[in-house]
Image (cartoon, rainbow, N blue to C red; front, side, top):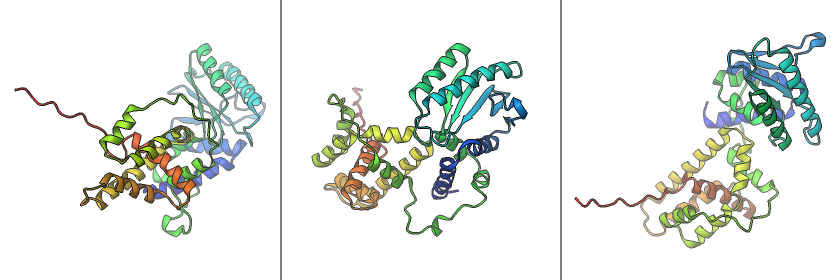
Length: 315
């Protein structure tokens, strides 16, 4: 499965996650976990006993999972915490004597938006009191497991059919377009007046011989790098890896296109990447792409990392 096909599979799966609630979400979670690990055992509710606060576990590792997937998580902080508290109480009461609990994960349908800080606080308290590892298991985590399955299992989970990228017309299907949309719809935070200086960033601009005008654009855009990091924190590693490949490829194409040029070559490559990354010539889109370029410039996925000059030997 190539990157385009995997992206389409991700979109189909992501839509399944976003449209699933309650038992449907739990069934999808269990399907992915069983496909990923034969040691994962789902727990089927039985009569009045239910599942005894355990939706699935791994006896070998002592990992336990409990799913909470309301129609909407917004304004349900109290209910989410109450569910967690009752889960831990019942889990240790029934399951600890059967198979020792070493790790507990609260599986929440956060719809790629993250969860309340109080959830992390409560999980940290549980970890301290019960001497176990705890954590959340969100949409991005289920997606991560899903995307690491074999091609056959991925296709099986999304329904046995994967649309061919060549048959999808007039729709821009790419992580690049997705994150540009995220940037355009993000409500900006006030910029901290004490935003730290980044001498390495300036050094990279000078080392790569970019003009002052492009250097200023990158510096200004880098003030919004936190938006990119927030997007990555809410999505699987596939998105970060795919975007890195996109920008690295654009950089390599730019180098090849301008390989015979000496004057203003860095600026021409910069302009090439900027134009290739913009699906439209809209100013807002161009500014969003600059934020992405500053992120990958800082990580040296586009342009070169400064290297210290070699010291001449005295001997």
